[in-house]
Length: 345
Image 1 (tube, one colour):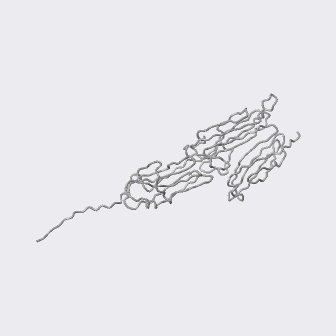
Image 2: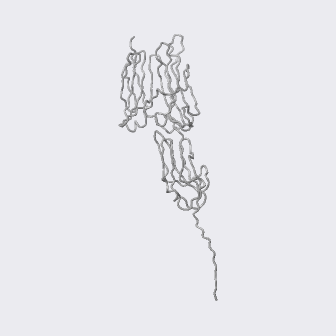
Image 3: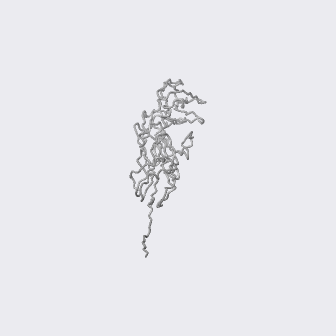
């Protein structure tokens, strides 16, 4: 069969770190020529943005394109950012994932384990004629989920993902799917971390493999938590305040977390004095955990009475209290004495 010559242009959308630190990343597009035995593929280096002409002609069977970026270092980390399939008669598809974290500009959208998200699947080019090939009449949508366990998903093997659902799309246009929370498995639903992947495939009836038209994935990060030790609820401090240890776990990648103290019982939304040694602001790609040991909060206690220490985190999802403890301070020294007088003769 005569090869069909078709220039294929691939738009790039790489990780933000790749743009900011180009010396630390290598970006390339891999084109796999289908319909050949063994499979033939070409790699083409690319910049952090722009377009590039396909390095090889497009055959009737089509070609699959993958966009990769590789972070250099002691242990190189590879990220598959995008995929596309092109053939002489295949439809086209796009997947857009929307979350509440609209501030994040990375190539991979993200959200938290307890938050909703939406997925838009747009399909164009589907045919319906009686003589049109089966692969041109419908596509298959697959939804996969995969836990990261206790890691951040570096070099994850996506072939081990769990198929959560699948559906057939046989009409052109946009389909929107809304999800209340992620379906990634985990004993503690608030602490799951991993990714959900949405992929659109062709449907072939000629014995050949279905081909992936597009794939996008969403990263899910756990809900933050914290604990305060060293002072207990209801404890009375009479002299110097004891050293306290504050542990914060799984802070959302873009967040400001701080410890504050104020006089009175625990009250949501109350503004106190910030403990300078126990605060952290981050804007990065993965969650963070820290342990703070603090003694300087004693300088903020200026009166006897009931006091509260609490840990607050601020994210795109709102302001939340992670932990608190209320104690008493009684440093007033009272001296009781009896005075008497005597006279002699």
